[in-house]
Image (cartoon, rainbow, N blue to C red; front, side):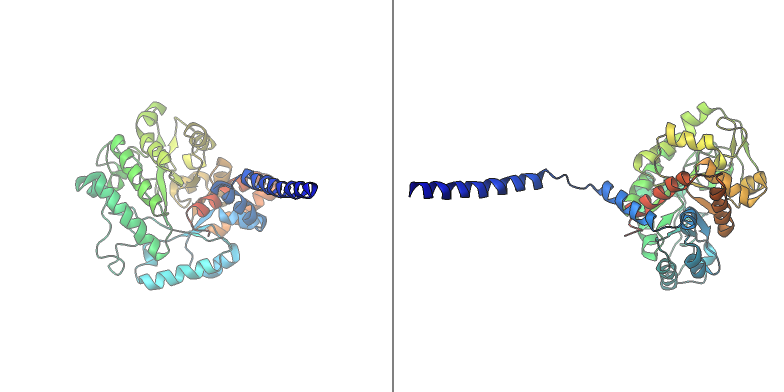
Length: 372
């Protein structure tokens, strides 16, 4: 009898101990972090992409007339919309149009506008979208300061998101010297310190709404002229940039800006031979010295300071990728895709280089809910 009882007790102990070991093993398994989930999802998406689709993912294309058919064929990373897309549209028609583009996208697109406020508004300038256009950064500075900036950014990010526009190419982080400088009418202040606070506030509010924003125009216009029409050379010392122009960009990076747009100025302090947008030295500085890990994009490659400098749209697209840009903002998307694809196939650009950029783009899209 005693032996039977001992056997039963031993069996019970074994059952409990086995369960405890199993529980301990289960508890010991580490939880998968959000970052690990994102990276796994990126791997999954990239396995399904062709090389040409990866290249197309790096293009923010000025929205073409046949936008849905073009997207279905090429799978661009995004479209940039201008005022003419909204002038005769309604909130309902724009949402329907964007939904149609996304429906043919294997990877959801960036749908972007320049809604800076003031002079540069693509959507809110039309009364069917908003009773009043969003005010300029300078107006906000003079009428409420940073608290007004926060309220404006919160409203703007929600306003755009509701329409299906998930990306705003703002804020302007440039610091002009005086009111007569080219970029001054779009800037918050002539003080780098005040601009840093402005940029931080905008980025923070956009991030709260999971809306992509973009710092521009790195590393800062200062008192330079208009690169839409002219090739510009900046002769300032690097110390000037360090002490002044880079302050707002540093603040934006620290606040978590997902994108930075690089300007077309030839900046002697960084690279005497190339515009910043196609300068490997400028991009290396942004990555290594400033520690930026997000998406880097060119200013529009249709602008004279880039296009006239290189003289060939295909070469310009290839140079932009070789310099280190993750995305190219351009009005000739198909030409750019074909030129970059050809450069990869010939060995001028490595597949590793393309994959690195595509990973950054996908990571941003996942973090901001553009890819579900």
